[in-house]
Image 1 (spheres, rainbow, N blue to C red):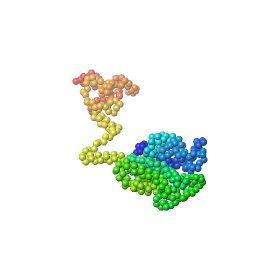
Image 2: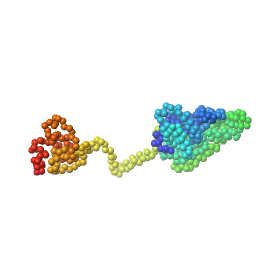
Image 3: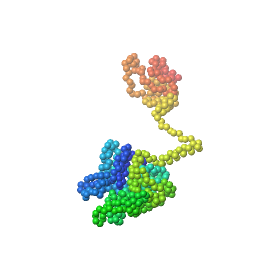
Image 4: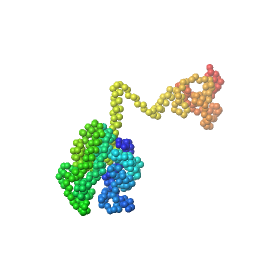
Length: 480
């Protein structure tokens, strides 16, 4: 799913969403630990890092000449690798101090725009590896945001999502865990901010500060706030003095009309590249707005009027991307392909049962106990076990020959056909050797007899001359 497989994402422990407006970091088992603006303040004389996050955002537009406020991330991609590394170290370092023993930065997952080129992807990977990650998995931002909204991305159903960022808006249609068609338009919070500032400068010759534009975003709402007017203060372009101007909401709508037109054109182009079945699904389900800029008042109403489709706002749209990454890291997302395979296997079993085909027997592995039982059964039939082993091959009994009868008094191995006698014998004690000749010393216990079911030989042969197996009379009797 996306740029990496679910198995690789399950091994990751950190999810990073590097946005142009804010940077968010989620640690598996801990939760969201970083949610700060992607802004840094640097001393131009020494190159030292003065502030990051919220503190650096407050300095924007109010700094002296030797302090510069930078944004190392633009449009969801890293534009300054070194500055992005320093920003992440400052934001994450203190919060991960207690988690270093868990080595949580070995594997990390990060979001990346769908149309990002290889250089942008490489910049994201190098940024995280410079912080301490050993391996980085990349996921498309629309896919992660759709999962964070709770949409059925993995199913064969059309899902349309608009990720409204600070600089760009990504429009994507997903099905079966992949992006079918997608497009990107330069529309976001910063683009609308610049459009409003430029329009007021051309129309009223007034430069607005960054904080003064936010109340004008209410002009996007076509409902109860449409008839309200707003008074803003700025700097006069000609005189350079402070001046206040009353702004009509219609002026703001006219200022943002051009970026919104580009967004509706992108939506139509994406739908044009989709199959008819998916477009029919979208006619019923509509589209979902997510991202930080989706909170602009009246944006959903204007898109609904321009496209004729249902438009709804997701819950916590600014956290959708990092929430989707966290769901993949924690294994809460399952691919639909597994369900298809399971259903196909079950259907094959049902078909075999209907036509009367017996199921294939399952072969269980032979364990040590099963092998021992089998060996015992073979030995009980009459097999001769080899010395030092539990069982041996089954051989047919043979008639004893004269030479074999002569060798009965020899070593036990010769009588059973197991081979010559061993070279070394156990040292006999004084009690056993007293009154015995060397030929009559006790032999070691012999193994089972060669004949099937035959009795075991006596441990010591009879010493009487009539019954001695090695005597001439015994040999003649055996020959007869």
